Amino acid sequence: LGPLHTVYDDKGYAYTSLFLDSVVARWTLGGPYQSLHAEEPWTLVQKLPVQYNIGHIAAAEGDTASPDGNFVVALNRWSIDRFANVGPLLPQNFQLVDTSKPGDQMKVLYDMPIGMAEPHYAQIIKADKLKPWEVYPPGTNAETMQPDPNAINAPDQAKIVRNGNKVEIWTAVIRSHFTPEHVKLKKGDQVTWHFSNLEQTRDATHGFALPGYNVNLSLEPGKTETLEFAADKDGTFAFYCTDFCSA
Ligand SMILES: [Cu+2]
Image 1 (cartoon, rainbow, N blue to C red):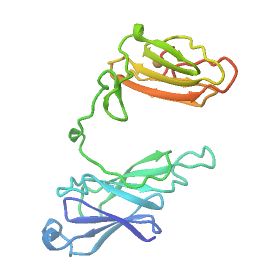
Image 2 (tube, helix red, strand yellow):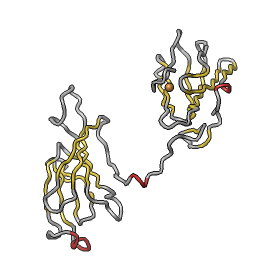
Image 3 (cartoon, helix red, strand yellow):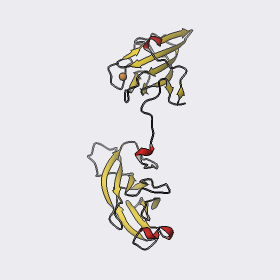
Image 4 (cartoon, rainbow, N blue to C red):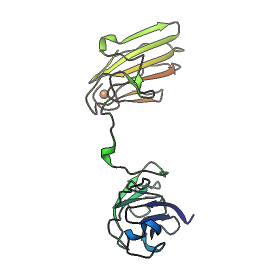
């Protein structure tokens, strides 16, 4: 529980997270890396306090053969006094550390509260190495990343098919409307419901909430998604878009 994880930069330094001390320890490498820094090899050069109880640590491209240097992020478990008190549940705290200067000149630059519980490990890579899609090609199943056989590409292809107590629905989603707008089910129906977001506009994500059934889908542009549930409740349920567009 003392030293936990070690990452590297381009200047012959290593950075080890020390959980109990709440510090980032910078120390020198030797061998082929000795000429990159002015200090003795295998020597501790700085213990930088971080807030608090650091677990994992990430260096810019630090796990590659050519670390980028300049920045380390301390993934801290505790934040205690770093943010306004809004109740008993506190965020974790990511701290950006400037490692650009040699020797004992590391500095904490920035705190970032993280509300998603303790993160285990992270990578920092250059943004220009990422080539993400901006939208899904129309009718993409985001789990298989293949065309979804239940995709539709226009509201007039939307339909409801009943076969005994099995009901299958193909819904078109586009600003600001779900088609079909009303769906009638009987108690005891088994429902298979496909949604196609027809948008190809970047960031035109829609949602689908069905209160009472604990359903809330995220439907990114071009995505087709399938929901299955047993209609086991009486009543009228208002479904609506949770990525506000007025549908
Ligand atoms: Cu919407």
